[in-house]
Amino acid sequence: MHLKVIKTDDGSCSVFNSELNETYHSTFGALQESIHVYINNGFSLFSQNSVSILEVGLGTGLNAALTWQHAESTGQIVNYISLEPFPLPLSMMQVLVQSYDLDLAQKLIQIHEAPWNTPNFFSPFFTFVKNKQTIQDFSSSKLVDLVYMDAFAPEKQPEMWTPDIISKLADSLNPNGAITTYCAKGDLKRSLKACGLFVNSLPGPIGKREIIVARKLS
Image (cartoon, rainbow, N blue to C red; front, side):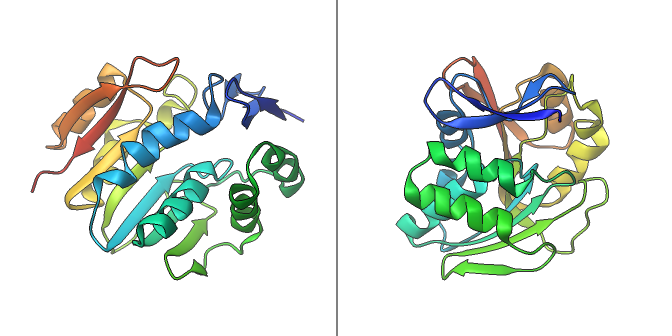
């Protein structure tokens, strides 16, 4: 098996893919990275009552579970779509969640037990759909407010970061929408700017110099 659970420096667990020689999160801390990139510099940018989110790369489900938690704390209604063509085995998740608090662990298990390709009404504040497909195959007539771009790094999965894919993500945004990602490569910045987005380089989480938040300012 090319997947194994690992513990990161903040005590939270992630997954290592030996085939790609890549971890699902920063080894400096899975939890602190997800909170910094996708909550503090993603979801928290939006104060309206309803927020729609597209996630590229469900992975362990940590971004989704944290967003669910924060939606309940802010009282915002979140419609969340996540794409994952290669889901993790539930048995692995049952090991991984032991490093998280009870509420987050329960949410992670619910996310991974949920049926595919159908809305799951987890709470009055969080509706979740997970699609077992790639961003290349995904299509929707509905625009979103926020994209969590959390595919593996460009050097591991270059097909996920092409100008065409970035253009597709930019086109999926509502006016004033945003793309947030841990990746801060120059090629990505140029692709985002070519789509007319305003690219903001922000300080990264522990162990990473910067991250990107790109806004659609119209």
